[in-house]
Length: 284
Image (cartoon, rainbow, N blue to C red):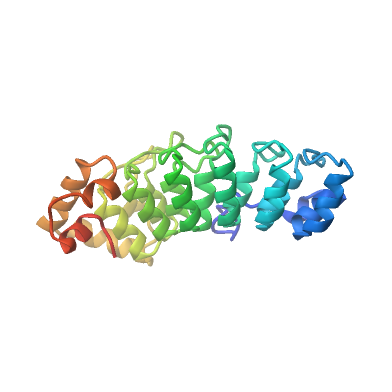
């Protein structure tokens, strides 16, 4: 059984396993107590102090969304990219919890966007959470749209598909994400992942419209249709596409998008009617 089927998020800190050795600084940061935080800093408390799990006050402030406290900590020349024992930085904590204001603050402060080469990137965390605002912030700041996750989840598009976050998947695809990128361990595409986890019809259709190969096979020789539970929406959509010839309009749209590096930027400058631009850009 996967973490998704168990109702667990792979990038969210397990509060129950956290060791209760947090300092007053950590408590102030996680509860948004700015006056106490300021008092402790004035007394010379080290803002980079970490507990036995490697969690700093900045981790706590960002995970709980207290951007003002996070900003005050950052002003003390704190370590922006400190990792805890789970390889999380303050940025990945903020993204995993959907705290967009903290994500924006960290980006503006110079936090690294693709630091976590050992496990996952902030973008993986943002799309798995389904936070479109954080996803856009990271992409606009230069995050790698196809960065591989070494926690066996694949690219950010794999993560969005696994978590059935259709809007985030749409944002990634419009930013140029590869719909046919495969995971090294099982050679599955985002379509395989979406199908095997019973993604809704909207997610499956989105991937197919953006050029996901219907007949692509994974390491075991399985197609997305063969992985989809027969009673799922995913199976119904995939079976329909298997049995029907795609419309010329869909093929044309895919061909146009394959010629564009960044769909969002390129399509809007084409000398075409607005409705046609919206169609080419897969807008709702």
